[in-house]
Amino acid sequence: MIEALILTGFLGSGKTTLLGHLLRRPEFARTAVIINEFGEIGLDHELIEASEDSVIELQTGCLCCKIRNDLATTIHDLLSRRDEGAIVPFTRLVIETSGLADPAPVLQTLMTDAAIAARVVLGGVLTTVDAVNGADTLAHEVISAKQVAVADRLLLTKTDLAGAQPALMRRLKELNTTAPVQTVRHGEIDGHDLCNGRLFDSLTKSMELRAWLGPETADAHHHGHDGIDTFALVRGEPLRAVTLTLFLEALAEHCGADLLRLKGIANILESPERPAVIHGVQHVFHPPTWLPGWPSEDRRSRLIFIVRGIPRGWPAALLAALNAEVADVAAGMSL
Image (tube, rainbow, N blue to C red):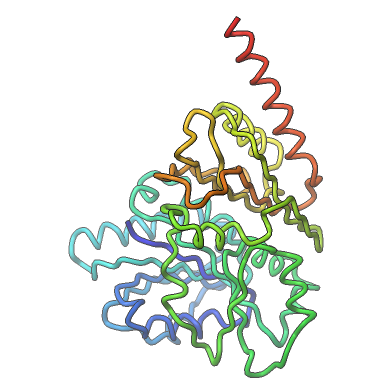
């Protein structure tokens, strides 16, 4: 499988500088890069010095409007050229979005295109945040807050120009309780820390699961800011498979774009030894990944919601209602 990393972040937050440093590191050899820029002429690809083992593709235009078709076409083309031996057999794909882009359509493309999903696994969403201007940007730019909210890891850039930023760190925690914050110094970071994920494909280690779900899922915590809330839904009792299916279908139908992201691990009654990994973006859900075993002694279902305008108690109430209804049907069938 080819690991895909989505690199997002608002304008001027240091994405291109970071990517240029990463592509010169040995652990990022044989990487294919898709760069999207807003405008008719792209320049970022000219600013990146990559190794001979890297492949760089450029997309111009508004990624938010065109990404579902254009990105899929670009990835299919890269995979075909790889198979034909026309380009380096890359093992990693990095998608750098425009600073004005919503990363959700990128995630949806990777999740919904069957041919891509069969060969490309999401390694994570990386969001760069400018330590100098980040707090002000988050206060005035809604898309910046969304980029932070959906991240698996936050990369704090330009720390050499700004000292301690407690207000910014509080804002980041309010928007995303689960993503660890990692400092980028002069555009450089340890590439090994960013490319050992494949979390949606193989969450077999307890530390990997904890990093993905975040350290605050022991109880149902919630935080909210600028209309974006993050909270956890935790259940000790196993869920029937049909209950989970109905729950995800209802979320997709009724929440739509307001469900910025959902991720978690579920204890399924019919498969108690093999937990299901759940991953969704807006109205699109990736087929559950079944782990070979529980990565820790904690066998509770833990679902992390990142939402906008959805009442915090509504998902829990919905799940409880569906669970009771399915239980009643099952009880009636057993009579």
